[in-house]
Length: 202
Ligand code: MN
Image 1 (cartoon, rainbow, N blue to C red):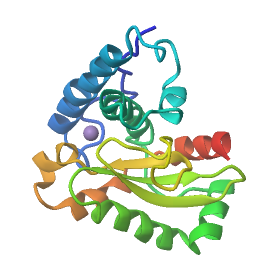
Image 2: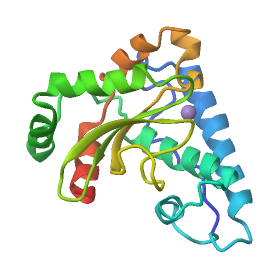
Image 3: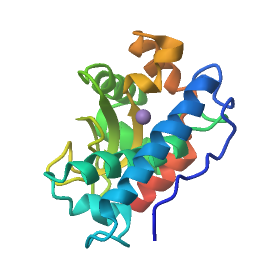
Image 4: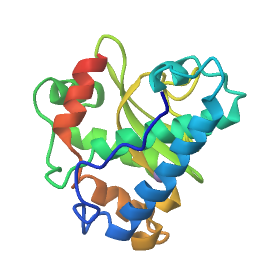
């Protein structure tokens, strides 16, 4: 069965002023849609056809550029829309908060590590908060549409939070001010969703 562009759980303007309406329209409706259709073309008629995206990325031949770029783009953006919410922001609680304190020392220290991974990614890519089996957390960055589910990529954990630092994610509103976009991202993080992904992935 072909992959489908997942619908957003909120309106295009719902993340204003942190992420602007036009960026959301183009990012979801054009960029994510493009990765989705190109992924379908890349797997059609191959032995990857019918597999889940997690299985495809986990067993990926890194020399398969079409599946690496478009499968990564499909998965990464699906995660990205879901870990944001117009009711987001604040801080995590419960087991995730404890795991963050254990791994980084404090929530603020985690924010510094995550923001640093996002700010220092040269060119296009992503920064991630990942969970390893056993519940340990890691921050890493990856280039282009790579992610840590792929063999040998990043910290090798399961991503539970990610920020897209491709210019298409922020340029209309923030131009070259990537740090301002990263700062604004904290206001829209859906910690309930991140906590659910932590619980499922640990
Ligand atoms: Mn993107």
